Image 1 (cartoon, one colour):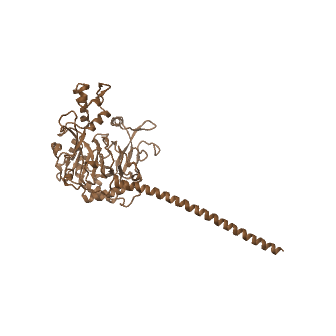
Image 2 (cartoon, rainbow, N blue to C red):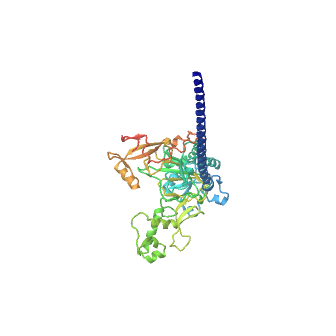
Image 3 (cartoon, rainbow, N blue to C red):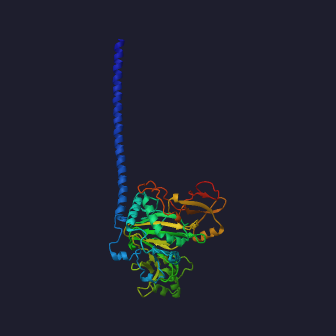
Length: 490
């Protein structure tokens, strides 16, 4: 009897175990099925996101940046109008003294060098020969576009990278010394070295910017601005823009404005702008005469003539002035055409559009007024770098370069330096003890250190999205703390 009970209990236990296993198996199957559905949904969502991102990048490739477009103009006459291939100054620029705004980089006699003189007189110059061959420029351009296309911002709708004004379809990508970048920079600096030595006086000037400056279709005309000012004496910063494709006016080349009177005009940009007030005063503030000369919308307020007395141009003056400025593609000049002049050819030349051939360079002083032009075509790719005077105190620059090549110092300010910064419109910091200071940027690489060695291969991309904020507003990144302030972030 006991044996029968044991057998029944064992059989019952086996049936219960079987039922539990079946239930557990069913549960596991259900969980697995649900997990598969969830994973499929997640994969589908990720795939949709990836397709959306890739779609945005492909659209920018094809529509705004047009990365596969030809890099050289097909029409010879159009190429001949560009700066950068033994082009002689024509039109208004033919009146300039000496070599004017186009200077040769093949000068061998040091006594003939005029680069520093051109910067002092005009604020800029354009090389009359390429500093990179077409083959080298094509390879460098493809590499820089590849780096930009590896960034996260390339897939974003606004198309903006860097501390740039009017930042739409405008990218300022700080660079590492990849194999291709290093080869191109070494070649350019080798060609421009006599010019840089003539400008700075020695080979101790410091490399403080290195970037790919790229605009695409839809990038607007920037407001006129200067990049930086030297706070002390002879401190200066000089920038070099190398065009990696032919850059006609519709591709948005840089507009640079004369910084002093010259043989073309007795006006720089601001004195030309103020000419409108002089004309209004000559009209004796007559509301009728002001309207007849097209100045009524600017200087007539509530039926009364009112000419501003401060030195700052008003928004109405700027709009009026810019509305009557045009580019003359025959000589690549930028001029103001006064609406009160009867002759359609009356113009006041005050700048140059740096429309350059592939491989040519624009060199300008950071104090020179300039702006980026409107890009209505496709990708304008420039390799950009800047040198500054050894241990210079320069304010205002974005210093677009990877942190590994910079040295940043927190500098205590004298009363005169505080006053100078304030006059330039720059703010400085104060510690809790009320000591004034400013972050001063130095370059670890000097002109005498060229040629450089690459520290990154062309294939590496991990660095591209890191450390993209490259300006001196980043107050946590410095090497020397002379004031003994505590903490990494102020």
